[in-house]
Length: 85
Length: 183
Image 1: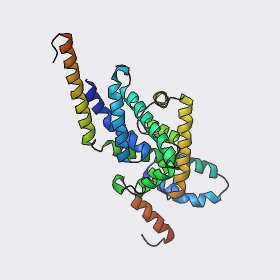
Image 2: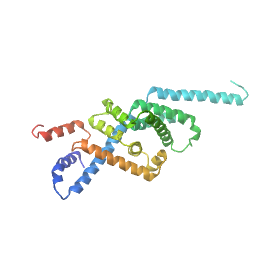
Image 3: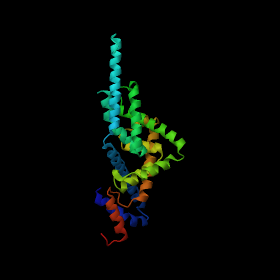
Image 4: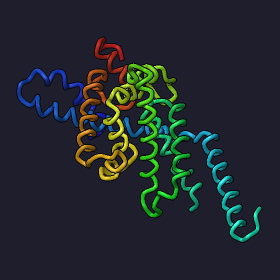
């Protein structure tokens, strides 16, 4: 369904609600459109967060953890070699 | 791939999940930091070849919930606090329409919001989401359904008849409905 059709259906909705027949089908259709809209909103919110740069301090934290572990590992292998660092 | 670059690769996603959950980038970064440190010190418990993203998400949501329980004890109504924080967020993430959406999302119960984000935005399967949340697949499904229905209720009241993404168009629609001649 194109955007134009969607908004046309939407504008007719108020008038159509007065009619007894077809009201339920229309409301199901509206619900479907609303659900699709919610899905898009959710995704675009999430994608906006996704595209934000990761703060430096988080990257630095990992660098630091990696460095500490590397130092730890090499100290350990030195010990097993019988050559303490 | 070494654990560091693997973690870096997943970080934007982990962060997007955290912000969506708690509604604040600042708090989200605290959760991400905590999750990263926990993940790092528990790398032994991660089984290579399994889904690292799901594993990280599990750690993050556990950090989030334990913090939330602490907060609940401190603040009488954490939901209210979050709703007002969200309402005061700068508009950097979009227009009115999106702000309404974020507010509605924030008003959902935690478990429903989490399920909806995992399925509808993070792209996990129902099985993966069930594992992350530590519940049955059927429970995830019903949480997602309830979340969608609740959002539909909240947003159908607020929004104009056009569900297009453009807030300006909505405004025009609203105006033209009052005064048909003005266009």
